[in-house]
Amino acid sequence: MRDRRENPVPAFLYKAFVSGFGGLSLIYLIAPIVIALTMSFTSGQTLKYPPEGFSLRWYEALLDPARSATEHIAAGNSLKIAGLAVLGSLLFAVPATIGMTRMKRSAVGTIEPLLLAPLVLPSLVYGLAALIVANFAGFQPSLWLTVVGHVVVFGPLMYRAASVVAQGINPSLAEASTVMGANWFTTLRRVTLPLLMPGILAGAFLVFIQSLDNVSVSLFLADAQTTVLPLRMFALIEELLDVRVAAMSGILIGLTLVVMLVARRVLAPPRQT
Image (cartoon, rainbow, N blue to C red; front, side):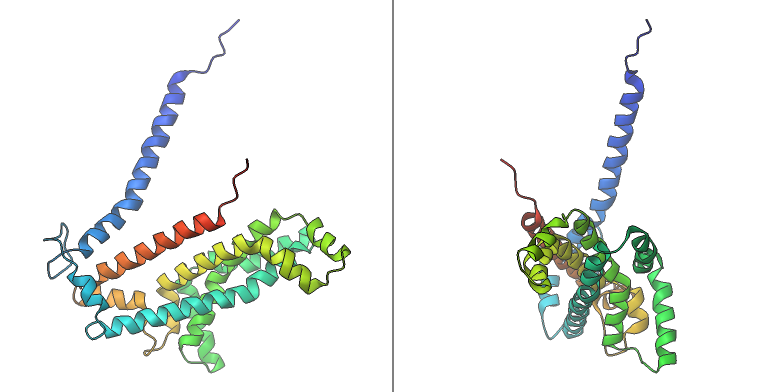
């Protein structure tokens, strides 16, 4: 009989390719973060790598309300827009997720691509189109128009995250709650929403981060008084190569890592004994 043992050479090449390509991908992802953090601690006067020395002067300058007043206003506007975008996404994504679980599969296959379409459409194209439509409707660029744009573009992320969780929920749990005498609101509050909470929190995190970092939609829909942090960072790099941009990046990276670690611990499934 022929020896049907697996040839070790293709298996070795496969492992070498996966390990090598995966390692290069990790380096490509991590190296810019490390370089940005390193430059934020420079003692020099401009963005430069390698940094000239170690200093916290640029973090102190960034936190100084007198020197960085414009940056503080931009950060406040970005946080406000991101928070309102999360709330707006909740208002449509959670009901849409619950409604989709009660619809026929054929109807879901027709409606769901429409809900997810903003994820495919380039946000730059949407921002320009939204500005044109807003002008025809008589609306001017403003903070609230920016919030609406962010909800439309990033809200599907929350729907997608919640719908993935909803697919794993046993529908008999809600039916059992109804059979036991609970009304629809009690079932929603005590059964459905707690089961959907991991997807809702994951979607809220995605919407918040994407909204906080967005440039294209804010560029078209924000007015001159609504300075947002990403646009302010671009202006500082273009005009001065200001090291405070690296300090901003360092703070954002740190906050993102902390939130991710907390979310992983909170949302991690319980260990089975």
